[in-house]
Length: 251
Image 1 (cartoon, one colour):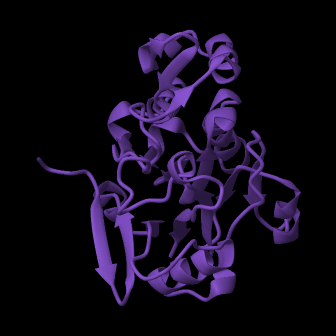
Image 2: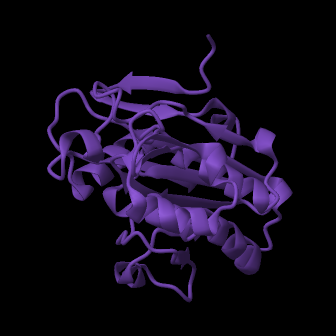
């Protein structure tokens, strides 16, 4: 079976990439997975690994203070990097030489590229962000600030906890039912008051709703809970588990 992802190991670091994104000549991207010889990666350590892989300085890798919100940060001359401390779950840039990233350990990392306007975005979508339509709001911001058109966007949805392992209760399912009339397509009730939901496919559906072509949305269907050799999983290993980072940049 041909996979829509590639895992590379070089100089002691390993990462996952999506060939469709690799073929976009003005960007670089990486989903940095569990490293073989390190423990739980901190945010600073993840930035260092990302910088090595992308041949950057650590200071060129930008992250945000993720708070499971629907807030989107814009990197431009009006929005300085210090403002990212306020709490955001997606960020966008058209600046070259800066890699923007989101940190995950089961939540859905989404990288978006506008090939026409040369704009990139990184999105962190847990169930709360998904319910708040964070990925749709990111596409809207790309349109508002940079003139992006949905038909020009290519998206990579990275490894996340799969429907096989993501069991939720009424606290999660009820707000999502209210928000998405199609939730039944992406949820299975396996026992009383317990459902399994597919966050990757719900976010794909949101992208399609914004006008992104389905053939331009690429999902890495690897469950972070199932594949403990490759990924960290908050659900499986608890709060003390490590983290991964998904980054994208304009060269």
